[in-house]
Length: 110
Image (cartoon, rainbow, N blue to C red; front, side, top):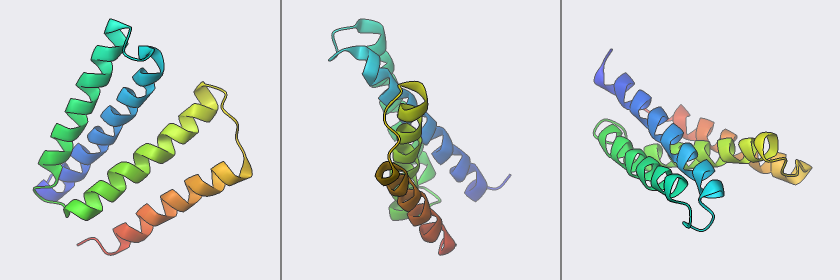
């Protein structure tokens, strides 16, 4: 596996860590619960660290757009599935726009 491919895998792991931290925010109760609060801090630290390694090979603008877009789309979908948040047409259109924006940005990648 080449360094470029490995960087994409690191970015995917970074997105997963950011999503885990965001889900843990729901359980941290305003940072009043220790374990979920530690998961939030550790997950976000891991996400930033993993992304910082991935941008050695990836363009920073592309990496951040993929990270933010994928994280936002996954969290929106998990909110609907896991927490029973409303699934409106507008929300789903927003997720579709985020995903399509990430795809368009990737069309120009290396």
